[in-house]
Length: 450
Image (tube, rainbow, N blue to C red; front, top):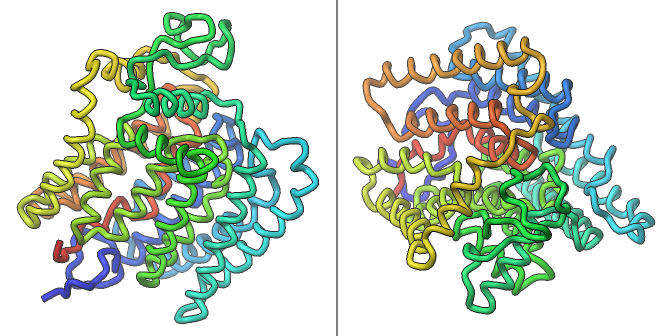
């Protein structure tokens, strides 16, 4: 009988694990995550040809991860390839400034950030290959130094000229006054001639929609603006803290947390103020506490933080037969947070959070195979269907839709949603990157007491 204290992420353990999550599969998916991270780094989430090639390579490794390969030589080569990618992932961030909107007065302090990043990279690489107390000390140092690097970046970029940041400011101000952020007009900081929004959404200096994110994100941003200089500091602190607690649970967890912390453009994600930083923190927290009731609550918060995460209710519905309490708690949290805004201006809420996404224009500059060479689109479609084949094959082998299989299918559907999206940028792929690290959510497949 499994103990209550067993970590839900002991993927290496043969007992109590469902699916095909052996060491080979982990390695393939971590290689996929590294290639995805490098694709984002090379173009900052924009659709350059080089980034699309790296994204295609990432899709290849994610697609064939379930494939059983008996060649020891090939598997050894992939492990060496992973080490090479890790060194790039840890070291490359120092070759580019961490944000787009750093104040000119901060330029003289760039060496301070470079020193922090270099120290973090050194500690991170050493931590990957060490175990025991030394590994924990190195890992703790990584978390502390990377937080300081992120904190410096946010201080050096106090007012990023990006719409998301202005949306959070306007929504927080309205909520503090007792108003409904979904029923107001968001500010248009790009001017009346911008092509970043559909023409019908423009109204001078305003946009014809309210706060465009779900209630979880609204409340977290509002609290972050109350307690910190701005909400980005709160999202960063939550993310690093969640990664820290995850990394202390075991060897596999430590490596996953390191990869989560060394996303090559981590500071950039938080500097831009995207809500995906919050989603990432909630996801790391979900994995850390996945066998307990608080983990189910965090799972509900995670699913209700971004609209495209709603399909992830399916795995928690499948979990009902095994662990009713965790399933009910998660689904209840999601339902409460999505339906609560309906009691005040439901039409404005639906339009701002869902309807708006339908009318948003296509963005040819995004990292998507809808735009670009036909041969990459064809290869992307083929590889995605190949990955779908392997995942359906696994379900047929088990003869039932287990929670793990359901999570795997939703993960792979989300992969298609991003690589064939009309506007997919760095923040979208940041969420996909984290999902890939967790081998499409194997943390859900272990049983523990709620």
